[in-house]
Image (cartoon, rainbow, N blue to C red; front, side, top):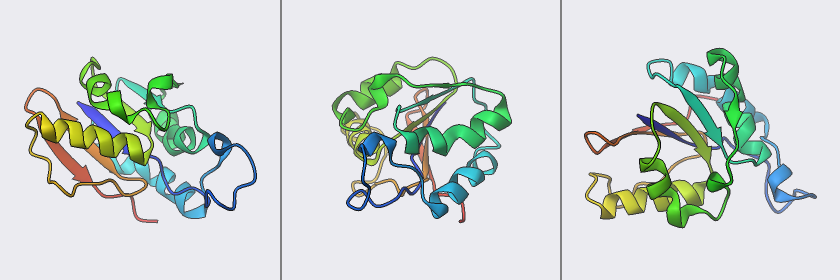
Length: 148
């Protein structure tokens, strides 16, 4: 099982004065991140992977703390890496939560749909939301972001 998490709400990109990778979550995003463990309580997680971006790591930090897991930060989940995201996701072994960016989640969903997964044509991911992907049955279930 793969839990594909789009990072929670972050501060506005245009008003952030610094490297985009260092842009933090805003207040709503912090509340969404704190709600993620409850949202995913019914799912087993062996590992957590995240884009190295601060907003992605911060999104899954409460989940990692609750589950006693470390956050791995491979480059494959960085913003702009969506072209290979579906292949990367389907190559994962075990039950893994992956936190990444909107472009990566959208491109992964598009590729999975093109491969025959029953994902609606207009499917996208709200900030802080999760797609539960089951490669064995090729099913995808959308979980809206935690209330904030």
